[in-house]
Image 1 (cartoon, rainbow, N blue to C red):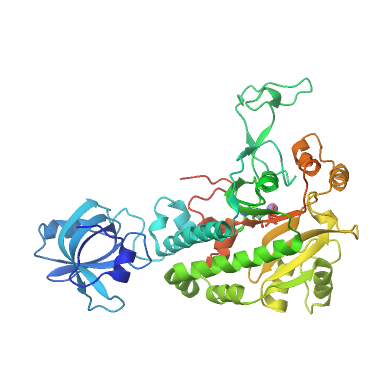
Image 2: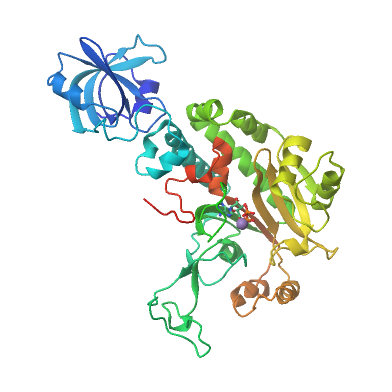
Amino acid sequence: MTTRRIADLLKTGQPDETTTIQGWVRTKREQKEFTFIEVNDGSSMAGLQVVVTQTVPGYAEAIARLNTGASVEVAGVLVPSLGKGQRIELKAASVLVHGEANPETYPLQKKRHSFEFLRTIGHLRSRTNTLGAVFRVRNATAQAIHSFFQARGFLWVHTPIITASDCEGAGELFTVTGLDLKNPPKTAAGAVDFEQDFFGKHAYLTVSGQLEAEIMAMAFTNVYTFGPTFRAENSNTSRHLAEFWMVEPEMAFCALEGNMELAEAFLKYVFKHVLETCPDDMAFFNERIEKTVLETAENIINSEFGRITYTEAIALLEKADRRFEYPVSWGLDLQSEHERYLAEELFKKPLIVTDYPTEIKAFYMRLSDDGKTVRAMDVLAPRIGEIIGGSQREERLDVLERRMQELDIPAADLWWYLDLRRFGTVPHAGFGLGFERLVQFMTGMQNIRDVIPFPRAPLSADF
Ligand code: ATP
Ligand code: MN
């Protein structure tokens, strides 16, 4: 007899079919002559109803042990279900209890728990409806990302986790060291001497794979990264993690327009795939977590994204009939309230803002002929604000060197990055997307810590 996953049985299982399932008990309802247990194996939101009659060997003992959280294997035959909301149920022939869960001490009893509380039981919370749905959607999103890029001939490149270059210059770096922290070697000036460290230099956990992705794009034309990145964010927000995953496509022979087209096609594809593969989970989020989840997804899939320049965005914000908390003026960065106003209220759909002032963007973005703006783009989405940030990169050696000088970025550290402009340089572009932000956006989950199985944040690295 084969063991089958519950999602599969609920879809295709037929009456009279014999089968075995394995999973964890969600609920138990004892009747006079039989007991219903609902078993969930993580393959779907819905569990399978199992009917255990008194004729099953060891009935009394098994039922006593089958409380919420217990692990069980049931062999039996599928029968049409009389209960509402389910087509079939499993009539047990034999029941094997693998492990009990004491109802006095098992923390996940059948009631609503706050997400804060669930974070304190990170080893058990994936067994709840909401976290189960989140991690299935997370999985489907990851798969969609790979299939989108692979279908377009992009190479998945693995950029390093340990690096000696600080790409964003943001200073939110975690040091990686093998030095004895009680007694580190010192330079003459009294600073820690990283030349004596494992890598012979100060090394960090990467904050972005972009610069290395650019190297790979200069050989494979179209590449993407999808892997963990780290930021020592001291901000305790609902949108920041210390460890998160980033998706970073990079395309050679591509300008900003191609980059915008890719970003729009990418978001549409990923949302469509997730709606198709996880309809029950998405319906759950729409009903229980955030009422606009499905509407937002449809909006992404079906509407053509708006496109405006930063300069136009500032003009629209200055005309807005409302007071913003943060000032609006040409040269200042857009704050989340501004981004949401534009996407949510003015355009009522996703919006790509391009050509930002040079001063507020990174050194590698391509300088425009006006001398004041760079070819940057942010994709803003209703309810979330910025979801993607990208740019055409500066491919001209002299301009890049000048920019780095202006910003005091030592050319010696990035000699290889400059070399790419010496040898076979081409116009190229790419973007970065925070994977957890995307999953958060899709599911409507309020806190980013609830869309990654094991969140890393200030003072929090349990499990
Ligand atoms: P923010 O202004 O929200 O801090 P950022 O400007 O620092 O973002 P980038 O450096 O452009 O972000 O990083 C690329 C993407 O990575 C962002 O658009 C966002 O989706 C995501 N991201 C950045 N920091 C974090 C974080 N600490 N946790 C989770 N995702 C993040
Ligand atoms: Mn940041």
